[in-house]
Length: 628
Image (cartoon, rainbow, N blue to C red):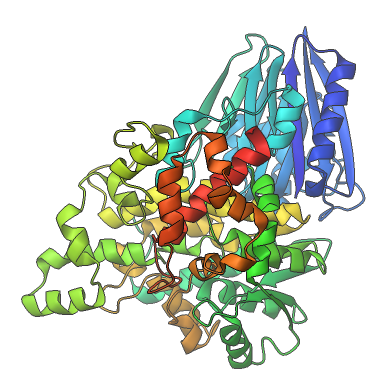
């Protein structure tokens, strides 16, 4: 896990490029506190600069980047890790290696296969290859976008970086708000697709590459992989599916434990992190496990974690549980977190995520997480709701009654359920409706369309559940979920690895029939995962069938503790900060502030006044940190 930066220019001198790369590296030093390097290469009348800051995890002695081929001058920088590099090294065994790590393997694979080399990589990565023979620079990003990569163009050239702040520094751009992204943010809580909240700064999409032609100064972006559920399944029975799932997950954990430093694991009371931690403990019995607790019992999972470790005997006999408590005082850190996350996202989980990352970083450099299982295998309640909405029309009156009892929200959802999957994707989580949004922003917004560049290739023949899963994995997962994990873990120089986002597991899940993901009769999502992990004794029965408890904070309760809130919160909602910014309607935000209630609000609540306030709070802090 590291940070990369780069620039392509016909106008800047070699010395200026190197100086800017050094400044870009210093700004993202948290991504790579162990070492740094900057190199400048020439191709005709164009200079290409590559910068690298290193968090040393693998190949501690020879793993510095950029790595350059002694045969043809191809150079690579890459943030992340290619987990299957040992297997891939056999593909390029005839090459002369100067390192023992994973990124040189990727470089030689590119030299042998061309752009198709991306199809062979299994890992999390965002990188760049300078190819003097092709006269090109290739930017690339892993299939699920676990590692970030941003870019922009100015009159001076083309710039890219792992984070936005160094990109602003290197390109000498003044940060500006992208007003077109505002309605999208206040609808979805983040900005899906290539746009960011920064004007003229774009993300390279997940599973994509950008091919920059050094002769013409033009570039094109292409996708090399897309998660589209509903393909031809490879399983013929539940038992076969369970066995295949376990084999894939075990191997995903195995290759993600490849490291020259100690590997630990996050652990909550849920099945995802529990299964990863359990498999890791088999391989490393003295593994360290990290979790956070809350005083509110609705949110606290510490007792569940302890029960799991006791039930998992003897797997966790020698494991060490390390935990801390997430309290309302953690709101003091929110401005720092907004600056670290950079992309404007309204997600209460950033506070406990930051805390557990900080805790783990005091002991290790690498942790495993259970991130991604809910998105790939349909673990959220909204997937159950979608399955219920699709199946209710085929049920008897008695079955319908039982279903409506378990899913009372169907009464409101069915009459307005949209035929367009883009609208269905957000219907249950829409933060502000069209009229509210127009009032909040002081102008008519119309219906906020889902960004086309964030759309997967869904079609009418796909099952609605698979349509929803495809959209989840194409937009919310990379641009909301793992984005916050990357930025907050790297804020503490901590590498996080996600076995459930192994592309082999995802392709396996894509081929499963929908009833193996969501079993409506048993009211259960992630069905094949739960059955398999239980039957193969990875987790105990209580953990296997425990209802999902979102990893978030009791936001409404915290906001109601008005006397102990940080000064910046009162300044925003009571001190005139919103009026001074001049973008949001202060009367509406004031009413929202007064309407916050904790009554009937719990971790499973999708939209509350507190959530809407948090979106305003996050945006206001973002403006103050970057633009105002």
